[in-house]
Length: 225
Image (cartoon, rainbow, N blue to C red; front, side, top):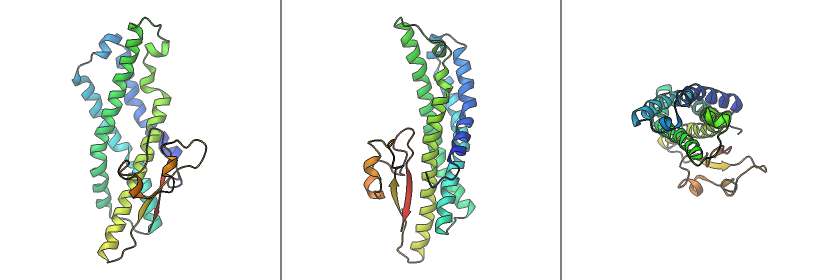
């Protein structure tokens, strides 16, 4: 992703930020019977959902800032700090709640699937009994890669909006338009490959702010006036 100079570092930051709350929840649930873990009241899941939302609101700022700063620097127009902060919160506050809900639903699904396997008479592995999938390295990698891609793209859209508004105010018409770009290698998926090189109007109805188109999406945006 050319617009993120420190992508690996940012992904590690996101993964490490979510590791602690997910590992703490794993230990809580693993200390119960599977039946008890699967039947926790809504209040239990809501508590964890709000914790994850607060953490997400903090963590997503870094990739958002990197995407925003990258594009703002390349076009020579950086919005005022208060404007950037406000634009970040307009996106991130509701999105963090949505992400937290998704993460919580996935955790519940993991517990229910393992319980279902045991009830079907299948032997559980030590990893399944300890609910390792809740805070596994694989899950954290998926979260980090997907959310880094999405927050960076959203940060770029914020910078582009500020630039375009300034252009219109001055009576200019050289507005920025986003173009979808893939990594152009053998790992590009069937969802993203047809989008490579296409402008905003082609994909905006499906992906309002561009990538990610799916979990672990590595696509990025290119901006042209």
